Length: 334
Image (cartoon, rainbow, N blue to C red):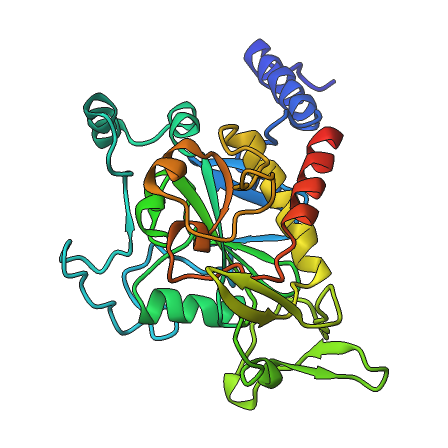
C-alpha cells in the first residue's frame, strides 16, 4: 500500500488545480497580463488613450508609420534634422501649446496634457492638401525637408497616418497651431492651369479620370495593393479662392470616407470642434481669409485658406458639405 501524501503536498496540489482553473477563465476586459492589447487598426491616440475611428489608421508607433517625434530624417536616418533657428533643437513640434493662461501653462509644464484639459483648449480641425500627391512624399517634404509637422496625413487610398499624439502642438497652420489638430490630404493641389495636373491625372479607355504617378516619384507608399485612384468627380473642378481662379481634381471616395469617420471621432473626443465650417452672411462657405477676431470666435472645421491669405488649400474641389453631412450622420449612428 502506497503511503498517503503529506498534508502540505495536498494543499499545494489543490492550489495548483485552482490556478489552472483561474488561468483557463475568460480574460478580463483588458486581456490577460502579458498579452498584447488587441487593436483593430482604426485607433487614433489622444493624450495617450486609444479611440476607434472606423477608418484604417497607421500610427507612428506601428511598423510602416511616420514618426514626427524623431529628430532625424525619416528617409535618411543617419542624418539629423537641422536645428530650428529659434529653439536650437531638431524637434519639429512643441510639447505644449502657447498663449495659455499662466495657471494652465504652469500646470502643463509640470504635468503635461490630460484629456479634459485638451478638450477645453482645442477647437479647430485645420484641413490642408499636401501638394505632394501621396502621404509618403508628404512626410518626406514636411518632416525631412521643411522641418514642419502635422498630426494626420490622409493617403489616396483612405489610409490615415497619425504622426503625433494630438496633445502635441504640430507646426502646420501658424497662429492656429495653438488651438488645432491638422491634417494633410494627399492631393497634388489646385492651379491656374493644368500643367501639373496633367502629370498626375489621365483618362482611361472609358474616358474616366484616373490618377497616374510621375515616373520620377519613386515609391508611392500606398498600402492598398493595386489601388487605382479616381477623383470622386470625374471632371476638373473650378473655383475662386481669395479671388484666384483655380482648377483641381477632387479627392478619392476612399479619402472622403476616412475623413468623415476621423472628423466625427474628433468632434466626439474633442467636443469643442464643431461640425461646421466658416460661413458668410448668406450662410455660404467663406472663400477668403478670416480676421484674427473671426478666427478666435470660430470653432470647427477650417481650411488653410481661412487662416492665411497666401494659401488656397484644401482647394476648390474639396466638398465641405459632403464632409459635414457625412460627419453628422456618422455621429448619429454612434
